[in-house]
Amino acid sequence: MQLKNLFVDFPFSIPENIPDVEITGIAIDSRAVKPGYLFVAMQGGSVDGHTYIPKAIENGAVAIIGEAGRFSNPTYIGLENPRHALTYLAAAFYNFPARKLTVIGVTGTDGKTTTSNIIHKILTAAGIRAGMISTVNAVIGDEVLDTGFHVTTPDAHDVQRYLARMVDSGLMHVVLETTSHGWSQHRVDACEFDVGVVTNITHEHFDEHGSYENYRAAKARLFSSLERTKEKAPGSSRLAVINRDDRSFEFLDEFIKTKKLNYGLGDSADVRAVDVVYGSSGIEFSAVSNDFHVNVRSDLVGAYNVSNCLAALTASVYGLGVDPDVAARGIASLEGIPGRMEQIDLGQNFTAIVDFAHTPNALKVTLEAGRKMTKGRVISVFGSAGLRDKEKRRMMAETSVELADLSILTAEDPRTESLDGILEEMAAGARSKGGREGETFWRIADRGEAIKFAIRLAREGDIVLSCGKGHEQSMCFGKTEYLWDDRTAMRAALSEFLGIEGEKMPYLPSLDKKEEDWLRS
Image (tube, rainbow, N blue to C red):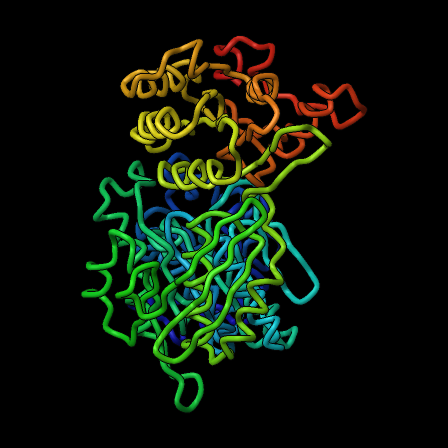
């Protein structure tokens, strides 16, 4: 595509003297640049892409976009906000694929991935060819693509590339999970959303956004984007789906200007759950509105998954025209989601679960679900990430001491922060709620050893919950990503405990290196 054609439907000021070159691809990492590529240089939190412009040119970039005045070259185009521009340039490069799809956006603090998967299952049950882009993977027909080590919305050019592949594969709908980072960094601004869904907005990412109000505003951009989506088919309209039970409800209910519906567990919700039955193997309830009454069953557990099912059902029935009974069948067909309340059973006489709960609210509802799944004790293993919202450390430890019987504080991506320092902040939170170190909570820096310790504590009928990593495939110490999977670790620990052959415990530097060693690495 000619570079000038990327600016044909550009929503910002169009620069003068666009180089007359043909673009064969777009990259934001100089190492990914190939001959004929456009390189977009952006200022990041710790890395400035402008310093890699010479390397991008060396690798074959024929044009560069960056901040105005940052570089001098005949093929350099200076823009006010290259990051914001990238999403529209990428959309144009791939011929605006979102305009050819019905796009369902899902955002929230917790439950985004689960709700996205439920909607995708509902669409499949309805015979609708649909793809999905989540923080776990991208699903395009029968193909499943990994979207990265850690969870966030893929970069703008990757999102548009996935959407274009879906169009080429003949798909008609896509479920797109969107994070607050994805919205604040404009990665999904050109995705032309038709339906927007929010699960909840609780405490998270205050390191990035500064306050709950700013964080909520980033999430709310999904709903303001509905106003900008052009009509794709005769009679099509936009729909916002919000949580009647969440603290964000009043703000969003006032903020949203398109058609909107709410869901919840109370009588005042537009779509509500009644006769809810919780079990260790799933949930059952009736979903009720002014238009339908349908029985729903799911293998998912916990009250929070009743809400996730309601969100998906509301969006599917009222936003996408799916029959309520078909939607219920779709919900029932979802067997589980990797790293979300995933049970690991090697024949032990207690329950072992891996879950992604990494926020105070997620840990709270996970422990509450665990309490309903057992008559024994609830044992939690969790950490809090380095270089992220520090207030969570105290809050999560307080939550666990209050809701679990025994808590083990451990590593979760300490990055370049002191792991000992993080654990001390968590321990202070635990003590503030009456926790007694060595009796009701412990600090064990190495996550593998922490999981082993929790399993040794477990008695028949107890439940051990390893929270915070879920499906993730790595853990960051210093600036190095070490291969890590909580599910592998849990199986390794159980195998050793039971004295049977099994997987090997993944290695982390906290096992045998001094902290100052990996902080320098």
